[in-house]
Amino acid sequence: LALGADRALWVSSSEELQPLAVAKLLRAVVLREAPTLVICGKQAIDDDANQTGQMLAALLNWGQATNAAEIQLGEGRVDVVRETDGGTETLRLLLPAVITTDLRLNEPRYATLPNIMKARKKPIETLTPEELEVTVTPRLKTLRVQEPPQRPAGIKVDSVAALLARLKNEAKVI
Image 1: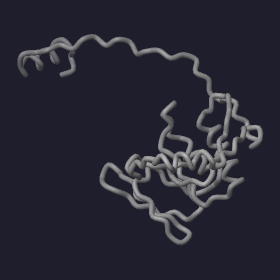
Image 2 (image 1 turned 135 degrees about the vertical axis):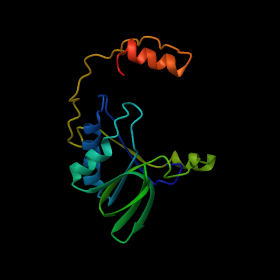
Image 3 (image 1 turned 135 degrees about the horizontal axis):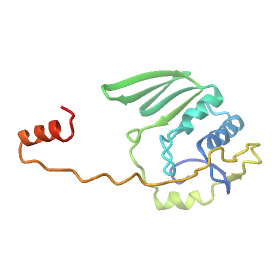
Image 4 (image 1 turned 180 degrees about the vertical axis):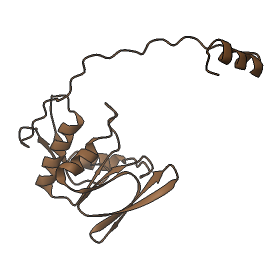
């Protein structure tokens, strides 16, 4: 709000929200607010899933582009540049669309104190999943988390000849 938004919606839930539940909540908000472009982050910091934007696009049956490094809006379309291993790729999507971002999309901006004070007066509408008619019950359950077994320590050899001898005689891989 301190960076320029006029209002905010906050969906509050006491449940642990998994990516599909977040996508369903966002879908309900999109149907209510009727935007033509939804921009999501790339990954959540809690589960590192990188799924919500893609799931939202599927639920809405909208086009999608992931990992956007540049966005250029046009008449009824959006051009998205994304980085690939071999350079960049430019996609053109018809609106409405969902875009997930890469960290290179924007330069961080910092709110000024006067704008922070103004933001305190801007409306924040609080909604619940029940009000949006979305069930957020977790569909996945973590049964166990454990560390992998300790690997044995490596062996140092003095020369290439010693390495080849170990690979041939002990490991029997040559």
